[in-house]
Length: 319
Image (cartoon, rainbow, N blue to C red; front, side, top):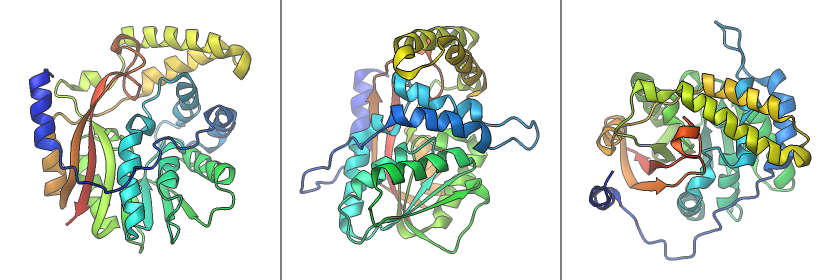
């Protein structure tokens, strides 16, 4: 995307409002090195098994912490300033106490919510829903480690968000890059589910990648990317071998499994994103393009990794 087009999109998309006060810190406490052995040990026993293939998602949840340690994962922290500012506003206004996290890879999204709500009175009620038990286990582990004395209620539910319902209606729903887990029709169903779970006026706060060049072929790692990514992870593992007590060959093999299985579904344009939310019963309070640099070049990475990309940062209200 050229610079003039970037400026045009930013002018069109930006709907910023003044906060009138300082933004909170954008970096929550992140004990990622300490969480690595916890996740690796938990994933084989807790990860969800596919009812058809019998394969569990431990290839993902058992490897994701390595990517976080190596700085190769696309995490909420890439949007730390956005989440700190937007979640901070909602925490301060006192009208968004009931919070839902819709899908999460680990505790990282929860950490940003806890940071924003650290001084909220009354304290938030936070629910985290994911179809795998491992990230929910990590959320509880994080709460016990970082906020052992906090007066915060944390509920978790192991289920597919599309199949879940509750009598509760939430004030705010938050997630990071969850829309990219769904192709077009399931994505529309997800927006409808979000609307159903929110009270009137409730907010969605999220980010999602925008890629006009996206194709189904780009949803997965290419063979060359798989090989280059495995080499990159091997080199990173060698640097961390002593501190983490890891075998670089084993971690590189896990990287290959990750690259062979992971996929993503990008939204092609702001217009497509607008239509998705607006036809689904939402209006935008904030929509801004964020152009992010990445640690790994595209030749050494693929879906879900810390590479150069354009993201939409979104706050939308349920009509």
